[in-house]
Length: 215
Image (cartoon, rainbow, N blue to C red):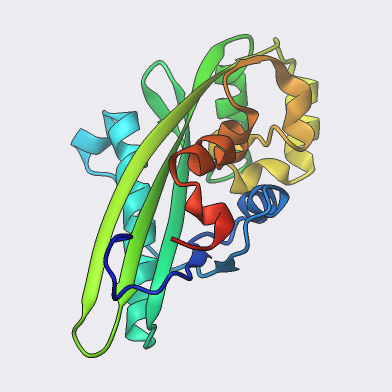
């Protein structure tokens, strides 16, 4: 797309996520962007649920696709890069999503206690050029980044005190490493940003034009 003479050199970066953590990571990296989060189907078919890496990539792609559809339906013209991501906590091949309630959060944290799990964040970047009429070009690429996280042994009092803060309920695996859940972490092997929800260093290494806002 970048080599096509009729494509403008300016690029609008769109973050397809309402997560304040992902927004902060992009801001700290110096990327100029706007947010457009769209509802996407996050249900997993049995074959995807049994394959966490592919599940994370598929959900990131669904989020990006939903945002692209809404933006095009809203009359967007120009060139944009839509960035979407999905983060999963995985222990022994089992996906830990956002807890349904306090009991679910407690069960997740008890399972993670004293163990090493994987945090997988998939990022899908969709390049869209929309000119006059039906002149629409689209291409996308998705990658997965994985970090190993080791929890120290947790007692029930520490788990219950953390759940009482309300912090676990909007986070995969029922913890936020950048907030109160960070106290549970003994070691990480990989990128901290991947655990937070967006591996920005790798994103900008693979798509350097996102920082410049130009192709």
